[in-house]
Length: 146
Image 1: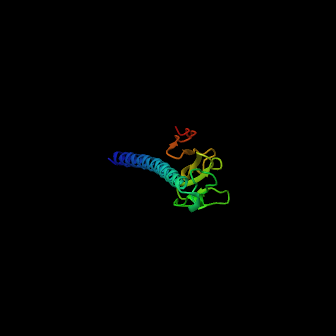
Image 2 (image 1 turned 90 degrees about the vertical axis):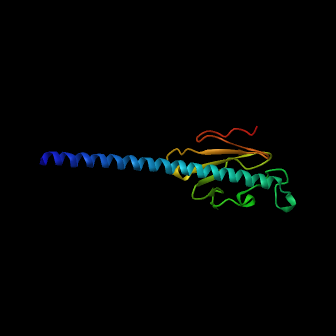
């Protein structure tokens, strides 16, 4: 009888250990997906704020139908701080202009906070145009506005 009880205790311990590991893995995966969703929401907010800047006349601090000279400070409304590299950073990730915003479109590259420790982090891009925006899949280049 003692051996059966000992075997049962060991079996229960192994099952509880495996369940704990599976639970931790599922939680980590869900947290990473939530971070990517938050970054996508931030990118959509950046696109909307940029389009407001584009439409606003230059005389009142807008772009006057161009994205020329746009910066994080000029579009405003996006939570975070601008670091010394000129990138916008918040708890969700880091956002950078792929090239200086100019003309009729520009692209923003986002690195989610969940990817910051990786050697080659997976980024998400969005191309912003006056009347729409195109977001790429994680790790892919954003398509041009069409």
